[in-house]
Length: 458
Image 1 (spheres, rainbow, N blue to C red):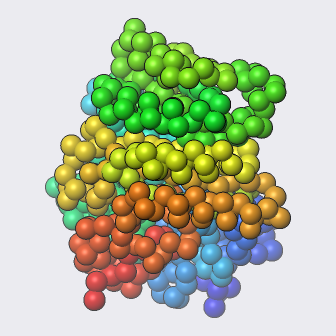
Image 2 (image 1 turned 180 degrees about the horizontal axis):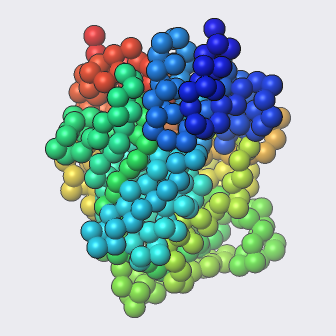
């Protein structure tokens, strides 16, 4: 059956249909997480919305699994499958900026690096992710925590409209006026409702920021975390960023004898007037004596891609996330313990602040319901050698489990892994039942199920 479907698609779509045996299939089937090794019947690099609609119809008609791939960063590997079809949006990269209206329309295959370069040319930005190679689609649909969130809200709070191809193949535009129920669901409900081919965002006047990376001795992490807890609660909302744990990369601003050692890391981001930047970041440099630092004024896109060289495609990935109402002394003990044992140079533990503008949006205004918590700790286990999988996964799970007494029930869906499906109701919190009803209206057969899945209401 899959062979005939693929051949029919070759005659229907304008983009590339890449199937087993075709040149480039091995490259096309791979996703960001090297742990995922699946063989779809075809990867379709869609040239436009008509191609996307054709693939959706084919998958629905023939009962095939359907994956949607934007930036391909999904740690569980939802951007591929075995024996089904993959909608690859990577050709949809256009970004059109309206500098007068301070808006941008961007193709669903854009990464934040592409988007930020286009908007920065006009001195504008919106809340994006921490890694430039992350796709705008997945981050937005799951909420979107980033450097600018305290001032300008989550990425989904800045979404103005979305062009969506739903399960029956229709293309609709969802915004506050039209298909407002779907628009509500897209802002935090993940990829459950269709394929977004174009996102329209509100932009803000952010060209340069003042910030960068500050490395601290890991045995003084408790002091850094206590400082961060109090400072980020009271600082002007133009101050964003995070603290966390890494192993020190071999970079020139770090002494050679610290390379590959465990460190506590601060990455402040001041997006207010540049003349205030040094003053606002200085407390991060004063809390304890840093091992090394690289801070100063820089274009916002430079901060957004700061970690990209450490994270090429093909690493092994296993991620977890939670939400915490506060950063308690007991949680700091857990972070200091596990943070001192980060097992690889690529692994990242970040404590994102989500106060400020994020909390001025009501819990029922979007599908992202966690508006009453102050932090989202994310544990992104990443490493090179598959032989280290068991050890690294055990560390991530142990860390996550140890934080649970100090966390609320759910977590940030963008950092949940494939074994978190049973937690969907907690992750979507009080919005789950409404999301399930909207899912029933737009995708009653659950065609879009390769995600942190919301089952249609019965």
